[in-house]
Length: 88
Ligand SMILES: [Zn+2]
Image 1 (cartoon, rainbow, N blue to C red):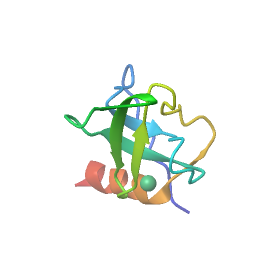
Image 2 (image 1 turned 90 degrees about the vertical axis):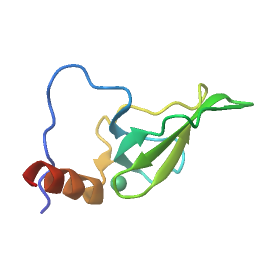
Image 3 (image 1 turned 180 degrees about the vertical axis):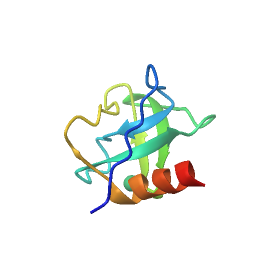
Image 4 (image 1 turned 30 degrees about the vertical axis):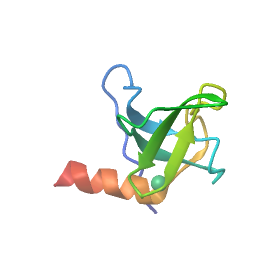
């Protein structure tokens, strides 16, 4: 079993963290980092691009925001990468 790393330490930065994107609808929360300088205006509002540690891309807009991970399953590949970085 993969142990999910418990990241704590003050307010979560909105620029990265465990997030559940509306698209792609993978059913899992990934550890996303906001891609700077790629904000694009779309018909759904300002779009923000995200890349997860495992390589999954996601796009959020003002109408389709990223969600708190809540009790969604967390991506094990992302969790493993975090664990590897913390132990490096
Ligand atoms: Zn992932």
